[in-house]
Image (cartoon, rainbow, N blue to C red; front, side, top):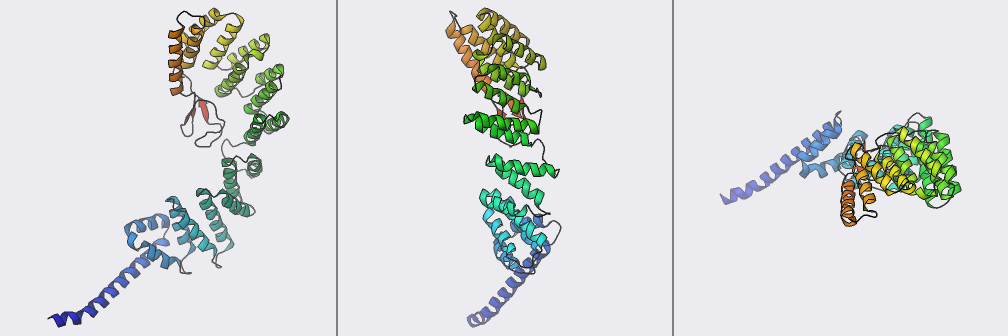
Length: 386
């Protein structure tokens, strides 16, 4: 009996090898059929999950074949990128580029996907190099320019971003709310922060030439004139803001409030009245009016005015300012200080701005959402809780 078992062992081993070979060939064939279907990406992903123990071996054999269509590589690389396996995605695309059989159109598509891999991996220099090489391709020009624009905006390289956006605009492919004027305003803001006022003014005026109603550019020109010590000119720019949305008016009030002591009394009063007439219900306006009254007519008049405003249109900001005014020259200053601090904390928990695109909250206005990176999507929170 023992001798019989020894005799059967080679036959069993051969049978096992034959069965395994048939199983591997069957799965490899299934992978090939799957890769050519319309739902290639989804099918490959499903196959990888169902047969993880065979996936690496089978995929390597299939992809080493020149007969396997490039669509299989592209689908699998896209799957790897989707799953965050960037090294594998990059490797597959590079392997494809080594093929001499690729057409010019196919090679351009592979290069574009490789650029996306580099971008997703944070290798912005490599991604930029790839997309720059595709800008002259009639098939990839718009997509390459869009990716370059994203890279330059991410890196805040506004000087490179501007010609990309200008070319996309010429081609009629500008995305929603992306404007050259906003990019020029970014350059103006950088120059303003570095005290290069003439340069900042030049960029802001270029922005207005690109978009005559660009409120941000006009506000920047007002701040530049304040920095130059020219309040009348600054007031003229503030009054000349054409696009008076609630967000813009809140910015106008912020500028006025930050430099309250520098404004000529009659001119600033007239400016505030015109601002009040343009947009109603913004707590910043009531707060500014109260500060002006405190300076011009005394604390009592400011308290009376702000008390009436808080009763008509209560908000954390209005009540916070009222508590601060009540604390001044008061015998109960400790109580009012506690109330002021408490209201300040509540106000911090209810940010003034919220992005309409992604919902992120912010205490101050960002012309570009810090989360989703969309332009001009932050809106002022209105109502009693503001």
